[in-house]
Length: 77
Image (cartoon, rainbow, N blue to C red; front, side, top):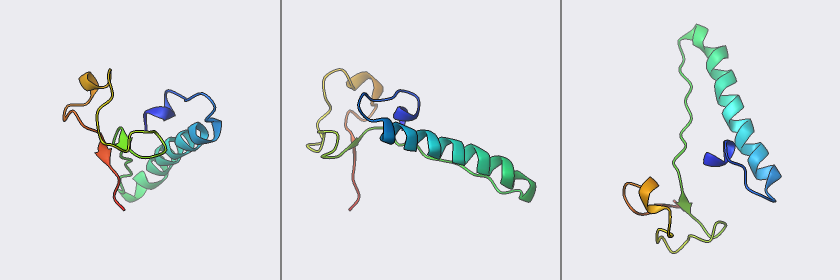
C-alpha cells in the first residue's frame, strides 16, 4: 500500500500495520534466502471500498494520471 510510505491523518494504526507488513516481508526475505525461498509482497494500488469512499468504482479527479486503466481495483468478496 502507498500508505506504508505516505501516512494518512488520523490513521496511525492503519499506517503502522502497513509498515509492519513491509518490514515483515523484508525480514522474511532475508531469513529465507538461505533456503532459496523468495518472499514478495504485492501492493495493488487503489481498491474501491466503502472505507475509502470509492466503492462506486469511478476514478476521482486527480487520480487519473497514476492509474493506467482509469479505474480502481475491485474487492473480491
